[in-house]
Image 1 (cartoon, rainbow, N blue to C red):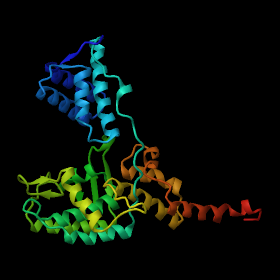
Image 2 (tube, one colour; image 1 turned 90 degrees about the vertical axis):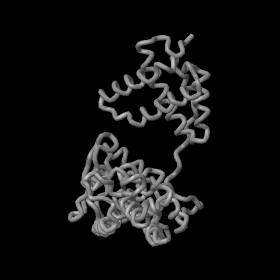
Image 3 (cartoon, rainbow, N blue to C red; image 1 turned 180 degrees about the vertical axis):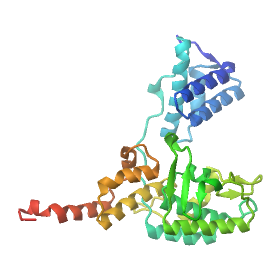
Length: 325
């Protein structure tokens, strides 16, 4: 029979677990946040011990979340308990057999250039607020960087003025996923949009310090946008511009990163470039550790299928037809 863990002991145990993982080179910021939130919920609920019953009660609070998110958080708690079990063999460890079942990830929606153009035009319909006086310009800049540079949402929101070089149009992404930093050169059009946004930002007096967020608002002083704060108006633009796939689905923000990768592949096929030799470049640009991660962002959409088929026919069609090259 397992021994319950006293809730009062959890803060120190969580700190020791996170410190151990970080000593191994892992970030564990998200894991720390989830474990601390679990502790706080247990403490606020006057629960004295972490056992099967209290763990199940905590899991019930995540019912509104998707199954994959619930399972990921349950596994974080599971690994934490396993770590405790090394020093306390009888420590309670939840059984993963009863965790939420994984579901297939939602197919990404590849946003087309004409749809992005409609979104950019629709930014003029967004109304500035006292806390976000540059909201239309901020959202326009966000869409440009997400779609043309393939940034992750978190990378976009962490950009500060010291991370950008307006003259050359180069962004520095610092310590992102996998602890990787990288330089991201922007296209000519995106660099022009960046300079235009910076001029608007300067007029609005939103701060010029090197650590000031690029996408800045005035809520509680000069602060960057939160994930929710930037997601809400972008989703509003999806609706305003009627950006949907053939099934009527509206994209997620992360689908803009998928769209960037797919559009890069399409351009290479159209230009007659060597796609395979360019994939490592795309992986580096997107901040991946290998092209295996990049392949996840490259669904075999009809446009790519048609272009690949045309290339195959051009170079090897004679083999199947029994003719000469």
